[in-house]
Length: 366
Image 1: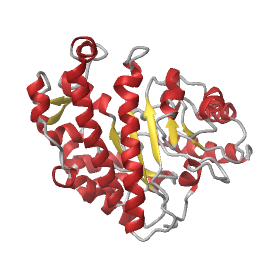
Image 2: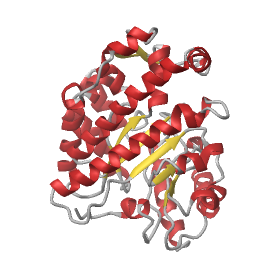
Image 3: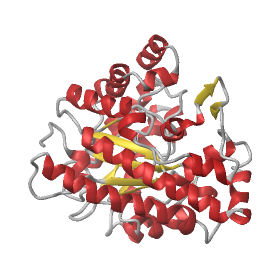
Image 4: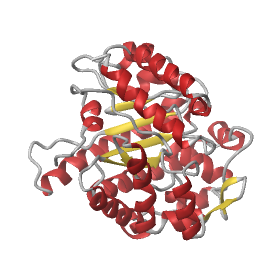
C-alpha cells in the first residue's frame, strides 16, 4: 500500500527520510477543544472508545490540525481486561478502575481465552473506519498494553498510588500464579494486535507503562519474555495477513515496544525483536543509539512538560533532542515523539510549534 506520507514507516524500517517523522502519544486528547466537544457528544470516555465513528473522528483531529506523520487508534490500553469481564470504568480525577479484580488462582482460571473478534469487535470496526477515512494520507498505528502493565491494573483493581506494591508482592509470594496470568495476557494481546492488523493497522505498539517498576533481574522474567512472545506471534501472523491481502514480499507489520522507565534495559528491549524501541524522556537518545541503534529504530523522547513552556523553549528542546540522536544515516531510524503521553494542559499552538520545529531542524541533520 502506498501512502501520501510514508515517512513514519520508512523510519521504522531504517530507510532514508527527508526529515524526521513525528507523532505524539495521546495526540488525540483533552488538550484539544474539538476532542472535548466530541467526547461530550459521546457522553463518557468508554462510550467514545466503543463508537467507531466517534473514535475515528477524534483519531483524525490531530492529523487534520497539525499534519502529523502517523495516526494512532483512539482507544485505551485496558480494553482487554474490560473484555475479560473485569468491568472497566473511570472516576473523575481518579483514573481507571475495575468492578472486579484478580485476587485468587480461580480468578485467573476463570478468565478463559479472549476472542477479540467478538468481545472487542468495536476496536476492529474503529480501525477499519479510520483507515477508510485516512484514505492513505498517513499510516495508522494500533496498540495494546503489555501483559505486565495489564496485570498491574487487573490485580490492583485499577491505578495505584503506591507503585503497584501489591502486584510486586505477587512476584515474591505467588510468582507461578502471576506467570499464569501473564501467559494468558500474552496470548490475548497477540490475538488483539493481530485483529487490528487484519482490520488495517499499518504498525502496532506495545505499551509497557509500568515496566519501570520492576526490580533489577525481574524485568526479563515478568515483562521482556512476554513482549518477545507477542512480537514473534504478531510478526508471523502479519506476514500471512499481508500475503492473503495480496501484498508481495511478505513484509511483516512493524512493531514498536515502549517501556516507560526502561532505559536501563534497552538491550533487553531490543532483544525482543521490536522494529523500534520507544524511549521516555529520562533516557539519553544518543547513548541509546550507540547501544541499540544498529538493531532497531528509536522513537522519542522529549519531555511532555516541554510543551507547557514557551515556543522558544520548545524549539530549543527539539533541537537538543535531534542533536542528541545525531545525523541520520543509512540504516538508522528515528521517529520523534514525546517520552510519554501529552498533558491535557498543553496549549495546541505549542504542539504546532513542536511539529514545525521538528520538520525544520531535522532537515538540517540529513
